[in-house]
Every structure is written in C-alpha cells, then in structure tokens.
Length: 116
Image (tube, one colour):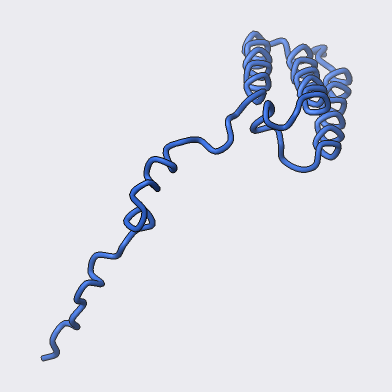
C-alpha cells in the first residue's frame, strides 16, 4: 500500500488577503461607483412598466429615449460622475448609445400592432 503524500503546510493555501491586513478593508470599498448608471436603470424600469401595460410602441420609444439620455450624459459629464457608463472612449460610448437608441426608436415606430 502506498501512503498519502505529505502535504505539510500546503494543505491550507494562503489566500490573497492573508498577506496584507489592510487588503480586506480595501476590498470592501467600491473602486468605481455606479454614478449616472442609475438613470438608465430608472429609465428602463419605466419602460418596463409600459411593456407590462401592453403598450409596446411606447416601450420602444422609452428605451430609445433612455439610451439617448445616457448618450447625452456620457457626452457632457466627467467620467468620475458616470461610473458604470464609462466603458470605452467617450465618443465611442456616445456613438454606440446614440445609434442603438435611434435604432430601437425606429424599430418601435415601424411595429404593426393592428390585428387582422
């Protein structure tokens, strides 16, 4: 029979917080606040209410307007206030949000909701 290998101190691996007593305190502090990201959450929550009330076209417009508002905020506010909206470069983010907002609004305007 073979014996189990001697693990010594390796049986309990040291974690990243074991070396530094202040690391746990720093890990608990958020590094990037969400900032103006909450505007998008509130806008999409309002759009969700429109969707639940079966107003699909208004839902699409609300999503498009929310994305347009987020693009405007990304264009004018400094990155420290935007938090989760800062993904790429300023103008790449603005162009992406604007293009997607317009696309959603245009698609909402072309919906055929009449029943035949």
